[in-house]
Length: 426
Image 1 (cartoon, rainbow, N blue to C red):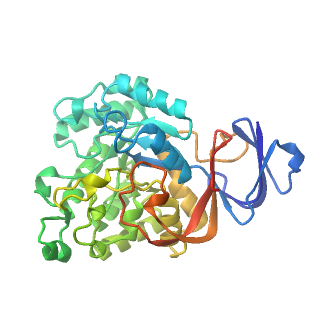
Image 2 (tube, rainbow, N blue to C red; image 1 turned 45 degrees about the vertical axis):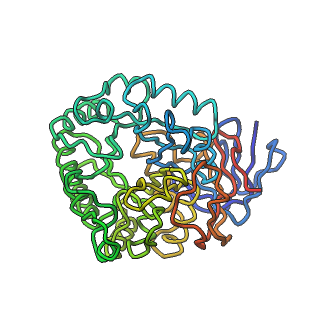
Image 3 (spheres, rainbow, N blue to C red; image 1 turned 120 degrees about the horizontal axis):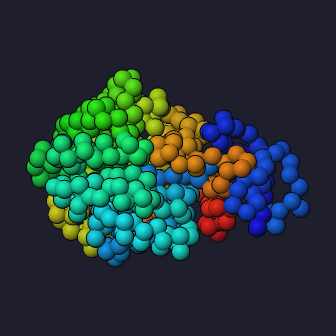
């Protein structure tokens, strides 16, 4: 099968290519990028006039809830949501049921994802058995089964010695640790950011120190062990400084920011609406401004979603009792373009770096590059369209997010996986 993408604005950070070109895909690979390729060269033609042609987005932080919690999301619905959002590779977290702490669960996810065939799914392995923080999982066995990284996402491994041993194992293997930075003892029942809003709502707050203390510890352990460390869903101004300082010391540390953390502040929380409840929480304006500056400066290298589906019933319960988490796969590109590109923080090239090229480099995988002889994972994005976000349009199982009715600019119009069109806007 061959596919010709005509007249698109090609943006490829791997080769610093930017301009109006045609792109030819043959089989599962890009074979040509030239100014004018005859339509007869391909069996299928896509006109991308006025659109950006990006390397397929890579989301380092997703929850597909499969196995065991598939009433919220499963590999098929999650893959559909990814495809609609222009995401061609997702990294799924291990807090499934059972926990992804062994090769059997890893293989189950990978096999099911290949069967669905809508996005590449890379299943992360848990650091400890059952994510209980008491005994290391068989990390070597999971590495052999194809995990891209280890993580205890949803919590931190509070036993620093145990965590250090895990870091030593993955340092030898060359795969990263994806760190959820949260001192569980400091959380103390907090539900939103500690500040004026938590006081006004009469709920316990979560201070910046909850994240900062563990982020600092993890960076120190990465320095000691030589492990590659990636800090998930960074939300505080201090974490930006910690990542910057770690990089300056030559430590292999990177950080991601989620669209909700650079778009909203705790002042935006609507009391009683637990779609605004996520972990880490929405922070202060000062934190948000620092996160955006960190992305602009390249200190924070990736944009990920922490896509965390929950049922409507769970999210309409009491704010203090409702689960943390929002979905993000179907809104991340539009929010990023609207807030950061139109907001003057990133260029389209830098957006592609943060959403594709850098995530591939952090994982050490051969993706995020659409130059010839590379796999044809491609996102076509129309930057001209302005519209409102509505959960009713989502193709995933859940629509728990605080962006209902929000006006954004930019829409994914086609997603190509291994040379096949897996999503096209109708």
